[in-house]
Length: 226
Image 1: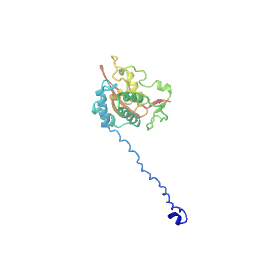
Image 2: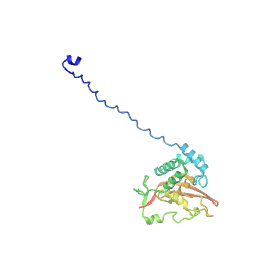
Image 3: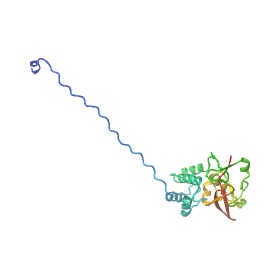
Image 4: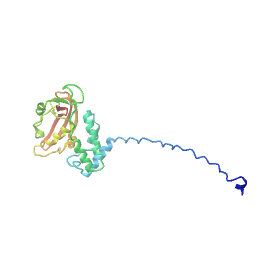
């Protein structure tokens, strides 16, 4: 009856549609960079690997906490530091298989992309001809006792990894191999003795213990064939 009295149906006022809302962007926070691994953490992990007898750890590769600390804190060239960082990354892998695979991969040095002139400063290797490289000091050695080297006349190799691998190919007088692979050689490295050799590179000093005695071997790891 109300509709008839008003002359017909009336149209109800439309309710205005709500204004579209713009979603509020959730602020994003960049993930924090992982904390750098400390030398203490690396050395604790080395001790764990030795207790587990993971690969060479705990057998041919035995490193005391003091040796480990020295190995990762002593002053080193850029190449040595790069090698140490690779070693740290491998050692901190979560299981033995990953540690062993990673270490094996670090034994190969990438080919150099640039060279420096002999006698000049810098961290690039000195480039020599393949014929010169074949005649370098130490190239014919089969045993540690065959190597005659000094700071002034070191063995010449192309890269730290290559030098460590070469040491693993040598043997003691009785045929034993205290250095079984590249990473093992690091436990026999006493440190570097500063510049030396014909090209004034940083020289590494290794002391390899055999039944017949200790062989001191000086290595210039910055001589590469072009």
